[in-house]
Structure formats: structure tokens, C-alpha cells
Amino acid sequence: MAGPGSHRPSARPRSGGPIVSSADIAPDFADRIDFEDADRGLVAGPSNTKITAEDGLVVWDFEATAFLREDCPDTADPSLWRQSQLCARAGLYEVTQGVYQIRGFDLSNMTLIEGERGVVVVDPLVSRECAAEGIALYRAHRGERPVSAVLFTHSHIDHFGGTLGVIGPDDDVPIVAPEGFMEHSVAENVYAGTAMLRRGVYHTGGELEPGPRGLIGVGLGFAASHGLPSLLPPTLDITRTGQEERLDGVLFRFQLTPGTEAPSELNFHLPELRALCMAENATHNLHNILTLRGAVVRDARIWSRYLTEAIGLFAADSDVVFASHHWPTWGTERLTTFLSEQRDLYGYLHDQTLRLLNQGHTGTEIAEMIELPSRLASAWHARGYYGSVSHNVKAIYQRYMGWYDGHPASLWEHPPTASAQRYVDCMGGIDSVLAKARSYMDAGDLRFAAQLLKHATFAAPGDSRAKEMLAETFERLGHGAECGTWRNNYLMAAQELRTGVRPVPIATGSMATALSVEQVFDSLAIRVNGPRAWEHSLAVLWRFSDLAQTYRTSLHNGVFVHHLVTDASADDADLTLTLTKPQLMGMLSGRGLDGIDHTGDAGVLATLMSVLDEPDPAFPIVTP
Image (tube, rainbow, N blue to C red; front, side, top):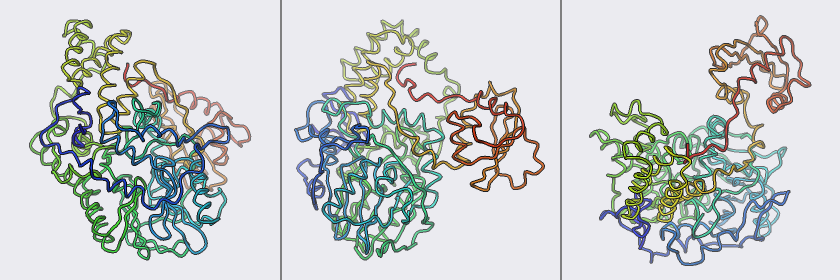
């Protein structure tokens, strides 16, 4: 039996999920057009079975997806299994004359557009190792063309992390990106980076073993590579829709789409090639209005409107549409239908959520009420493999109404552990809760069993029975989920309950040089332990000789404040430092004031460092 509609990401009866609504309309499994499109234009498969780093670490394993060649097992939703089979295809593909893609080498695609002298690289994957392997495959079949430009469609790491795999740090080539790219690409990794990375392990199933019982993909692709990310700043900003640039002789016509899938994003049209790139604004799944790993809530309204604009600007003059994930769609009529249905998908979710919230329904209620129109529900590309109707509706509600559901009982709830202890007491103790949870599990109501067992594990964290029952519940929910990220969250939770937290080292140091001084100071400000810093008052003047800039920072009332100053001649700072930005990074990594000119009280720096907390990249998620 096929999984239900994209708004019921976990609803297969044999997994004990909720009953399928009569309005859920499964797409036609006999429809093989996506498979034909995904295989079209294959030039060559990967040259190797694995991609490794310099130290021998396997950063990408092409054979990890071999199990997807088999029929769908009972531990996976057939619809998600189908999507993962499509995403597992790997190699060099021709999109149209002069446009090629590397697919299946990472979570995202790398696009290569041939110019007069070389090749323009669009979105060079997550890591430099995978990007280097991808461009090597391209050159093996298309010749030793130099990289003549690099283009980032948006500010997520899977679209710029492999930059140093295709060009060197000193190569003199244009690097093109939408306005605000550097601010947003780095900010996401600075301000809430630790929490996002921790939750991102759940989001992507980063600790799951590939296979029918574990990782089968995230809907957007199979997984993210484990190599070294990198970033070089753009040299050419795209600042307006309609802006045209010739890159290596190829005409690019741009559409800015801020606030859609990323806060800084663009689509582009190649009018001479009749090819349209939709970045990540129109892919073969329902995307996220708010990712489960965490992010700024996106604007479904403007997302839908930019898709309308793209159709008007480019559809009639295009023979193929491709994106930074998945496979292309060929034919003007087909691609227009595809873009129109994607537009309607986000517009419908937005408008119907607003309609229902204005009738007094909360986000949780609306998520259970909304049914997609039959045409959207039956379209494969509108399925909730990565986002879901359920959590997207809650995100739209959050964007407009915030966390508060309007009921005063929600204003001042006890935190999870305290609430759990009281609920368990009201229900007659831990044994009674476990017995009730088992009865709901046996009846197939895994959703409520999970709620009961969450209280049990928070009220009695040492009770192994509660942990194992909750792990079993999550495993069953995961195996029935159509949404890849829901599956990964459930299965990661089951694993953590059984084996504990296993920290995953993530190489972010290679991107530190991309931080601006302001972002470095921002990252310090959010680490200040307020109560520990209350009684301290200090000021530091930072003269950056390599930037010709001076910043003043102060600590007062537990707040670290920083700003650029133009005249520091009469500044009364406790400590003045003359340094370069690399020296700042070295100082913060533990080198102290070695080699840095300074006047004033050097002890001020030690005081500042003493009130900084270290983020915890291995905090528990499903236990207190």
C-alpha cells in the first residue's frame, strides 16, 4: 500500500500510524516519467566507488545506496523509497547543449555551463572533495576546460561548500551570488549554529546506517557528504531581477528571490540556450517553510509569488527547467505545468492556513485540517519528502502568530521535566504510564503513545523500560514515514534512546575566515554567560591594521556590545589592541596576545574570556 498524502508523513497502517484520510490521494506508481527524466542525458557514471579525503576518510560512498535497487521493504514507505531510488542516480548528465550536471555526488547538484573559454560552475556541492571528483568526471568526458566563473544560487552550505574543490583560493575568476549572500551564508553557521548542527544530525539521519531499516535519504537527495566545506566571497553581486551578465560569453538573466527557500537566493535563465535554473525554489518535492533542523521561517506567500513571476519571465522561452537538486523537466508545456503546480502548492498552504487561523484555529489544529487539492495531492513533485504539509502549516502559523496559541494556559507552562513529573503523578506513576502507552501502541496510536512515553522518559530518565518503549514507538513511526526528514528524526531518536548521544565532529573551521569582524563579535556576544558577567564592566578598542577599521567593544550589565568607530583618539577603553583579522581568530582559538600590539590592562581580555560559555554540540534531544 502506498503511503498517504504529503500531509500525513507517518501514516502506514502496518506501522501503526493514523488512519488514512479519504481525501489522501496517492500518485500513480505506474507513472515512470520521473525515472525517464532522471536517466535522460547520462554521459557517464562515477569513476570510483568512493570519494575520500586526504587522510583516507570516506566522505562519499556510491555503493551506500545499492540497497535501493531492491523492492521496497516493510520498513519504508513506498513513496519515499521511490523518491530515494530517483535521488540515488549518480553521474554526469547532459541537460541541454552546453549545460551539464553532476548528480548523486552529494546532497545537491553541481551544474556546469560551457562558455567560450571554459566552464561556469553553479553550486559546487557541500565539500571540496566531492566537488573535485565531480569536475574531474566532467573533464574526463568534456575536456580540460578551466573554471571561468563560479555562481552560488543561494546561501546554504550545500551550494557553496565545495568551492575550493573547483578553484583555488587565489584564482582570478568571477564569483557571482545574490545580494546578501555572505551575510546569510555565514550567519546561519554562527548565531544558532551549534543547535542547528546538532538537530541537523537528526534532520539528515547523519548517524544512521544506510539501509532498509535506517537511512534511505532525506527526500532532497540521499545525504550530505562528510568532507571539508569551504567558502570564498563573491566578487559580483546580483542586486535586481532583470540584471544580465555575460559569464564566459554566456548570457545569464537573473531573478532575485529573497525570503523564499533561502534569505538570499536567485533563479537564472539562459535565454540563448532556452534553459531555466530554479535554484531550490522548485524541486521534485514539497520543500520546507521551516526546516526541522531550525532556520528563520520562510515566506510561503512571497515564494508562491516569485514562482508566478518566474513563469511570466521565463517559461515560454524555455525548453528545460533544472534545479540545484533532483532532475530536470523538459518541454515548455510540461515545465510550465510543473512550475504552476509548485506555485499553487505554496500559495495554497499559505492562504488556507491564514483562512483557518482567522477563524480561530491554532497551528496544531490547522495542520490536521488542511487537505491538498486532488491535482496537487496526486502530483509526485508535490509530495512531502523533505518538508511536509503538517510542519509547514505550523511554520506559516508561527510566522504570523508566534509560539503562543492564544490560550492563557500556554503562557506559563512548566518546562518539560517538571511537566512530565506532574503528568506521570496524575496518571498513577511510571508503571501505569507504561501500561497505558503499551495499550496505545498495540492499538496503533503511535502518536499518543509517543507523547505518553515522552513524559515517562523525562519523569524517570533512568527507567530503561520507558526508553526502550519510546525507541520502539519512534522506530515504527519512522518506518512508516513518507517524509524523509520525519523518518530520520524518528530513527535518530530511537538510536539515541538506545545508545546515547554520539557526537559527530563537523569541520567548520575551514569557513572561519569567511566571518566578518561583526559576525565574530556577534558570536562572542551570544556566548556571554549573563549572570556571571553582571558585575563586570570593561571596554576594548580593536584597531584592525589589515582592514583599516576600528571597533569598540564593551561589557556591561551582562551584554557584550560592539560597533565601528571613526574617531577613537579620545577613547577611554581599558585595553587597546592593534591586530589583523587572522590574529583575532588566532587569539580566540587560544593563542592569547602573542604577537599582538596592545596598551592598557591586558587582564581585561582574560576577564572577557572568563565569562564566555562553550556551546554544547552533543546536547541530548529525547532525554532531559
